[in-house]
Amino acid sequence: MFQSLLPESVLVLTALILLGLAVSKRVGAVGAQRVAAAGTLVALALMLRGGGAEPGGTGLILADPLAHLAKSVLLVVGFLALLLPIAPKETEHPGEYHALLLFALTGLMLATGTEHLLMLFISLELGSLSLYLLAGFPRTPRAAEASLKYFLFGAVSAAFLWFGLSLLYGFSGGAMLLDVAARLQSAPDAALAFAGLAMVLAGLAFKLAAAPFHAWAPDVYQGAPATTVALVAAASKVAALVVLLRILITGFDALAGSAAWGAMISGSSMWLAALAAVSMIYGNLLALVQRSVRRLLAYSAIANAGYLLVGLSTNHPSAQAAALTYAVIYSIATLGALAVTAAVERDHGDDSRNAFDGLVHRSPLLAVALLVCLASLAGLPPLAGFTGKFVLFTQSLAAVPSHGLVWLVAIAVVTSAVSLRYYLVIVKHAFAGKPESHIEFKKITFEQGLAVALPALALVVLGLFPSWLLEPVTRVISQLAAR
Image (cartoon, rainbow, N blue to C red; front, side, top):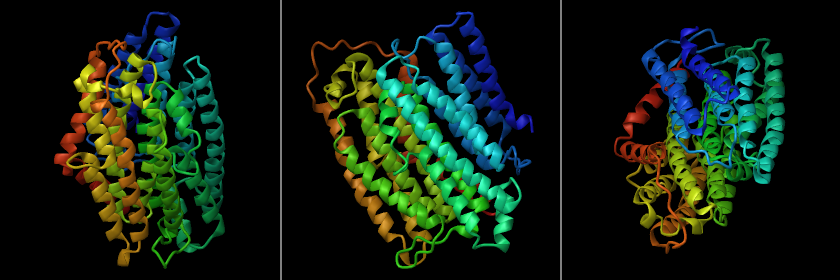
C-alpha cells in the first residue's frame, strides 16, 4: 500500500521542506516555485514508473488503472499550474503558498484513488480547504471576497456531501462503495439511498462548478492568483469527475434511471441530465456579456461542466470515457488560456478584453497559444477540443436506445456554437486590435514560456492523434465497469 502512495508522499515531503525554508526565510518566489515543480516532477516519475498494472487495493487506497491515470493527469496539471508566475502583489509568502498548492494536489490525488466513503470525504476536504486559503493569499479586497465566498459555498457543499455519505453508510451498513452496491441489489428502491445519492451529487456538482452550484466560480476565477485558478479550473474538475465516475459506476449502477426523452426514470441519469442542461445554457449565455477574461473563463467552466455531465447521464462506459477524455482536454486548454491571461495581466494591469489588443505584435507566442487554446475550447478542428466534443456527443447519442438523448445533445451542440462568439472575440482583440503604445511588454520567463507552449502543443498533437488519450481512458473505464 505504501508504494502506491509514494507520489503523494513526495508531494507532502516537498511541502514540508517548503514550510521549513519559509520559516527560515531562505526561499523566494522563484525558488519556491522551482522546488514545488521539482517535487511534482519526481512524484510524476514515480507514478509513471509504477505502471498502474495493479488490479486494485484495499478499497481505502486503490492502485487500479483509473487511479493511476487520474493521478498522472493531476500531476501533469499541477506541474503546468506551478509554471505560472506569481505576481509580487499576490503573495508575500511564496513558501507557504506553494506548500498549500502541493497539499491541495495531494488531497485531490487521494480522492481519485479510494472507494472508502470517509477517506473520500477527508481527501476532498484536504484539497478544498487548501484551495480556500490559496484563493485569499493576495492582500486585496477582491481576493478576500473570493476566498470568503469560496469557503462559505464550499462549507455548504461539504455539508451536503457529508450528510449524503452518512446516509449511504446508514443504508448499506458499510463504508465502501461496494457495500452500497451490494445492499442495492436487495433494496433497489430504498428512499434512503436515493436521498444519499442526491446529496452526494449536489456536493460534487459544486466541485465541478455545475449550475446551480456555481455561484462561487466567477469571483474565485477573477480574484484568486492565477496558479490557484489553474488548480481550481483544471485539477479540481478532473478529480471531481473521477470521483463521480467511481460513485456512479461502482456504487450506484442500480439507481441510474433514465434521461431518455419520453421515458425518463428517476435516478442519477435524469438528475445529471437536468444539471447538464441548466449548466450549458446558463454558462454560455452569461459568458457572452463578460468583459473580464477571467470571469469569461469561469462561465465557460460552468458550460463545460454541463458538457461533461451529458456523457455521465448516459450511464454507459463509452460515453463516460468520452466525458473523462474531454475533461482532460478542457483542463489543458484552460491552463494555456490562463497562462496567457496571467502574462497580459502582468503587463497591462487588468484582464479585460481590451487588454489583449494587439497581443500578436507584442508576443506572437502568446497570441498563437491563445488562439490554439480558445479555438480548442470552442471545438474547432483540427484541435483536441473538436475531437473531444465530437466523440462525447456522438457516444452520448449512441449510448441511449432510440436516440433518447437527442434533446440533451441538441442543447450541447447549440450552446457550443454560441460559445464561438465569446471565444473568438478575444482572439479578434489579440490579432486585429490596435496595441496601446504606452504598454511595456515584459520578457517572458522560461517557465512561463513552457506554461504557454506545452498546452498549445498538446492540444494540436491530441487533435491529430486523439487515440493516444481516448484509448487508455476507454480501457480504464471499461475495466472499472466490468468489476
